[in-house]
Amino acid sequence: MAAEPDYLTEADRLRAAARRAAVKYGPFSQAVVFLKYEELVRLRHAELTMDPRPTLAGRIAEVGEALREAYSRELAVRHDHPTRVINEDPLVIQFDRKVFDERYAGAARTAVEQIWKVGAAELPEGIVSGAPHMFVIDDEDRLLIWRRRFTFRELIFGRAKSKVVGVPVAHPMLVPDRLRVRAAGEIVLIGAPRVFAIVANTKSGHFRPPPSTGAVVRRVCERLFDVPAERIDVFTVGGLSDVEYSGFTHRLAGATS
Image (cartoon, rainbow, N blue to C red; front, side, top):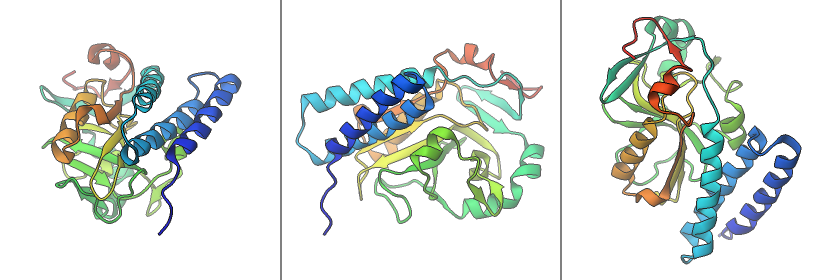
């Protein structure tokens, strides 16, 4: 049997690398975010495998706060975007059908066949503990996770080169029938077979969910995985209110928000 990884040692190496990257590229650069994200996942793994330690809890909180600040600085580009807010309470965002059919419909069936419709707190085959996966929470409050595994580099720097039958991957592929979500982003489930902790974000360039959707992700994950709130990290894009954030994401004409 393989030895358990030394998660704290790995986290220390990532922390040192992040410090060097901060000096070279700046404290909120993509390189620093990439390294800190991996560090947080290693720390959550350490929390799972070690006895409780106040110093570990403090370090998790510190790294989480640094990532929250970094994600809050990211804002959507100001241009018309192929989504509409079709309901405000609860918030539901719909991707444009015409754009979807033109760009993504050809790969949707393949993507849907690779979805885990979460209904249990244990990881099924194809979902890797500690690895990033794309997810959506659809308009029926279902958590849908793509079984395809991504790297942390793809998570931070973009999935543009990742394709399904020649089509770049995109969150709308996970909800091809109605194209509606309450939240979307990337998720890392930690612990196997039962989920112990969760690290997620709402970084979806296709749906562009506002900051309030972080609460939706926390609530759904708490319910489905029976994980306490203190072990769920969710990073939202844009440190603004939903109203302020909407000014940076010009959705299609006819949107209700």
